[in-house]
Amino acid sequence: MRAIDTNVLVRFLVRDDELQAKAIYSIFKQAEADKEEFWVPLLVVLETLWVLESVYEIPRQQILDSMNELLLMPILKFENQSAIQRFIFSGREGKIDLSDLLIAHSAKSSGCKCVLTFDKRASKFELFELIE
Image 1 (cartoon, one colour):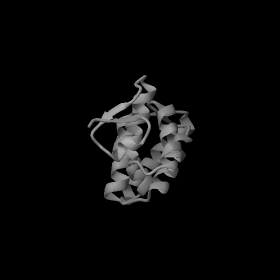
Image 2 (image 1 turned 180 degrees about the horizontal axis):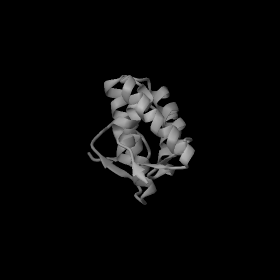
Image 3 (image 1 turned 120 degrees about the vertical axis):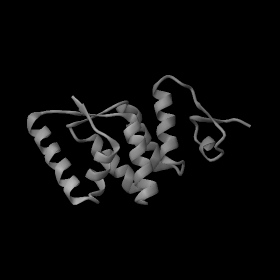
Image 4 (image 1 turned 30 degrees about the vertical axis):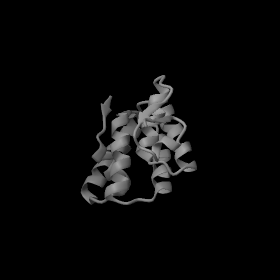
């Protein structure tokens, strides 16, 4: 199994570089034919969220829809997929930063009861505990 980097997911989703987008599309199509999977580390998901929000200014719901569609692709195997699924669900309900939500759900799935934070906005989500 091979892993993919953030720039691969971004090119696939945004298609801002025609040659790179065609290259990854071709690689994904071949992997589908060969029943090959690619590993998607949780850090790649986190970076992808940041790039889509900060660099491309893609709306929150569109990012969540895209992440959900990626989860459905049989060639992509995500680290901590259940945390990503819960993150997508809670991301649709609230206004907490997407990156913070992913961190919280990752911690929860690793057995943590909460994430300590100084971030007042994040602390409004049940999986965070504000340090005062």
